[in-house]
Image (cartoon, rainbow, N blue to C red; front, top):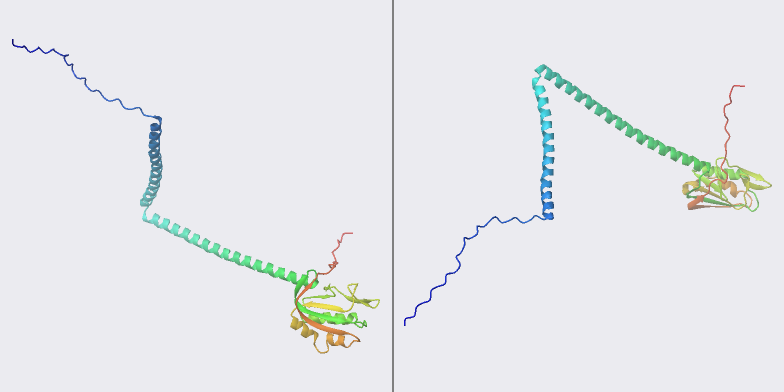
Amino acid sequence: MTATPAAATPGPTPGPSPVPGPTPAPAVTAPGRRARSQLLGGPLFVIVVTGLVGFLLVSQLRGTQRFSQRLSAENEGDLARILSSLNTQADALRDEISTLKLQLVDLEASSRNDQAAAQADAEQLQALEVLAGTLPVNGPGVSVSIDDPAGSVGYDTMIDVVQELRDAGAEALAVNGMRVGANSAFSVKDGKLQLDTTPLTPPYKVQAIGQPATLEGGLKIPGGALDSLRSLKGVVTDVQRVARLDLPALAKTPTFSAAHPISSTP
């Protein structure tokens, strides 16, 4: 018996293939929006600035063109007058600059002169204060020691010593540590030598600030103060050059009386 092949069982009929549609766009997150706003803000600022610069340039060019058009509209005579007026103004400005420069030079010179005058006045005031004895001073000079155990030195001899030192260029003097001022005076009371009513005790020490060699030479002039002192009984003198002396100011500043005009009205 011949075998018969089995019939194939029909399967499901395939349907039509679906048509592909557009792929949906992904959602934009919040950081993406901020980045987009920053990208848009930068170019916008550049555009605004560029517009402002362009506006200014156009305005300047228009002003220059209007001025050029005004000049081109003028005739030769008007242009000559305009040029002459500009030259006159330029000359006047140059003259004013020259005048101001001269005034500046005068002011600078006057300022320097004022400073020099002020410095000279200050130096003169200081010299007068030193001479009057109202300022303490220091400097090189000489120191004269006068030993007088017998009391032979009188006020007139001390005046000669001080005067010779001043004539030799002494800038300041002191006796026994007391400053000798312009109004100082030597006197004798109860047989004792005094300076400005203050008793002096021997040995006397006279100090003078100035050129040491000149001061010493002035004291040693033949027939001068040193010779007069050495001729007195028991008096021994010694002169020493000193590199630095410190002299005080006057213990009592002198006072002066001055007259004042009075009113003529009774």
